[in-house]
Length: 186
Image (cartoon, rainbow, N blue to C red; front, side):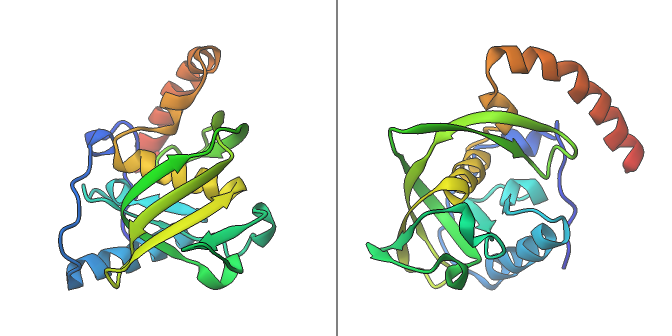
């Protein structure tokens, strides 16, 4: 089922999401709905608060863009990324590499708004999957960026918070105008 994507400035987007303690049928349904919603919106990632649910759950799918990374390892084994998509991550813990990269980001909760964000180029993330198994992923490029973006959502951090000071000032007026358009869209 396609769910409504919450738009900024809804307070749920600032929530520090609670840990998932049990993998229930409702959680599985939520994950499936989030994947369907993300695909319908042409996104590459979606976090539970973006559909109004304050739990540590996010989905990512980059199967359509295998050249966006140079490697992906699961539990230390190099794998072919498209075969391991989508990723459904529960209660993720993130370790950032030291190399940084600036890249353009958007967000389904901020339609038609994009900005250059500085993030770690490589990451290691440990999370639980829908089978309750602990998984560790190491990757780089766009997939690393997507993990960081979605995990930020689970901690109430939005991509606009990561803009540099000059960009924050210049985006303020555009954001106000877009928020009016979003209201009209509803």
